[in-house]
Image (cartoon, rainbow, N blue to C red; front, side, top):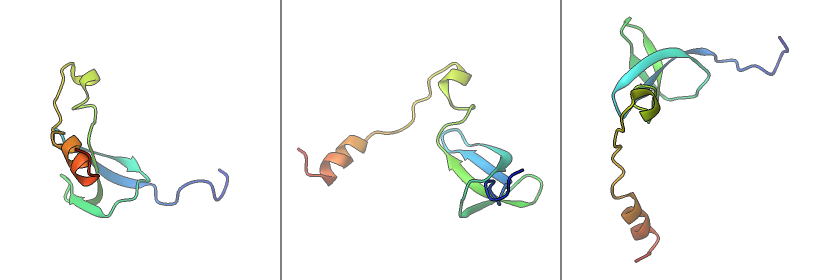
Length: 82
């Protein structure tokens, strides 16, 4: 392998789907400040994601509604649009 082009911190990371509370452990180079205690008793970095194969309509065959109500109103209030 060429030196200097590959990430240094390729490690085990837990990804947690916040919409359906599904977690899985895999290897990644993602940077994160959160940690979580996994089923094997070890502590791993935690990366929170909004959609995974357990919540995506393509894989589940049904539509899950993700609560996004109020985002437009919040934007309009913040930037003064009436």
